[in-house]
Image (tube, rainbow, N blue to C red; front, side, top):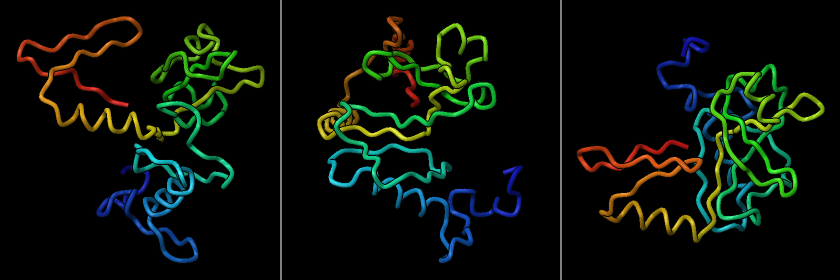
Length: 167
C-alpha cells in the first residue's frame, strides 16, 4: 500500500497494530463482526481492510434478508469516494445504491440529509439464514443466472457465463 509501505509484506489487513495486545486489523474487525452478529444465524460479508469501532448495542439482525451497514458521514468529503446507500424516507430501507457518485449526483438523488451527511457503505453486509442458504444453493447449482439491477437486465455473455456480481 502506498499509505503504509512498511506493512506491504503482510498486507494492511494482517499487519500488527499496537493496541495493548498486538492485533492485526483483521483480528479487530472479526471481533467487531462477531459482536454485531451475536445470536443471529446468517452470513457476514465484509471488506478485510475496514476498521470499525461500533457500540456493542448495534446488532445486524431483524432488519430484513440482507442488511448493509451504513455510516453517516460528510457527503462532500466522503461521498464521491465511496459507495452510498440511498434510503427510502418512510421505511429507512435502501432504495438504490450509488458507487462513487459525484456531489452533483448525490444532490440530484437527494442523498444528502439536512446536516450535509450521506449514508456511506461500510463494506459490511449481513445475510439472514434463509438468504445465506439461498446463496449457498445458488453457488452449488450449475444453473445460469441473469442479473437485474434497477430494472435493467444484464444477460449472460456469449460463452454462457453469468455476469460478475460485486457487492
